[in-house]
Length: 190
Image 1 (cartoon, rainbow, N blue to C red):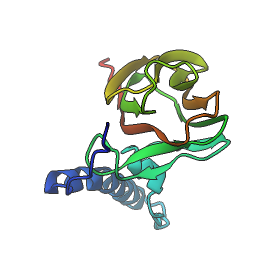
Image 2: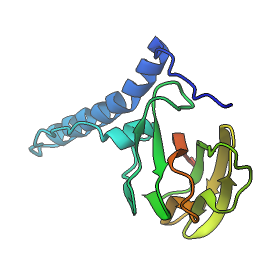
Image 3: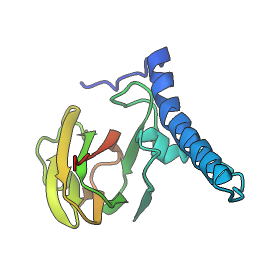
């Protein structure tokens, strides 16, 4: 019998990591406003909306996320890779639900993912896929432990999509999770 992992307390390092992207964004905004002030332009103060909880669960608040399908993905704290939170999706009847983001520069995308339907191993009727511009880059199904996926992203605009399918409707309950999405831009030396 498989048990769900319980969430350990977030360490100070985890909390600092989560604050890092927010601080970097504010520092960039401050630097830009200062530059505009120095060159004589009036800079309007920028207000910051609270971070999207879904983006926070994916650890990717620097990306814009959208989702659709039968039932939305949501924030889960019981099954995570980083011990804090993850995006999770409940399997409910015959369904398909997805989330996506768009990248505009080359680099490498990495993430951790997992599916778990007890008693099912390698079933094609329950799967989580990842695609770039509708070209499949990976698929996991049945019951898997956390796996890291890393994908190179070429120059240009690309839609990255995670899609969770349940074709037979037999399994109901938690079934798919994605965590620690990281995009590392390619730095070119000229």
